[in-house]
Length: 227
Image (cartoon, rainbow, N blue to C red; front, side, top):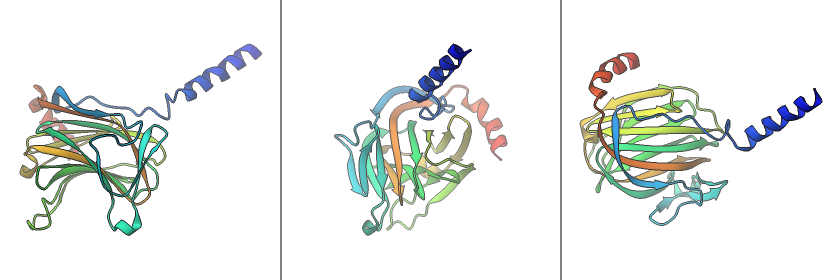
């Protein structure tokens, strides 16, 4: 009996030690996009490397991930961006909320903003961004998933983009869909943003792709469930 008790405790320690429960968020396979090739990958285990351009905020390497925090004097959320050239494709990343008001993964064209997936503790949204301040264009929230996103835990996000459509899935469970003509353009770069204190990111992967063969059949039933 004593041996079994020791064995059980050792097994539990091994389970936690490898982080199989707390550190490995559930991911999902793309629903709308058939992946063709890798565009850009960065596990962010050593912080932001070559090619990242940090405009605002404090970014630091913490426990094998990149941690971002807004600097109050910036009067702007923390932002860092990297080139990623594709039109239709998939963006995957893991994140951990650590006191932030909200974070996002945003996509820009060569000139102007395109769209983003915005995340806060009370849920996440797919958003068509305002192109720029001069255009008079306004941002539009296309769909929202109201769900509690626990702070201090790792979560997964997969964002799919095809033509005017955006599909975002949190932790392989909650999926939202939105569409707007302004999203249907070439993407030139992507970036992480953090409002307030603070959030961490890791395991960023970007792929180009085409519309999945079975998406047209699945789309109608999916939208009915969402509505």
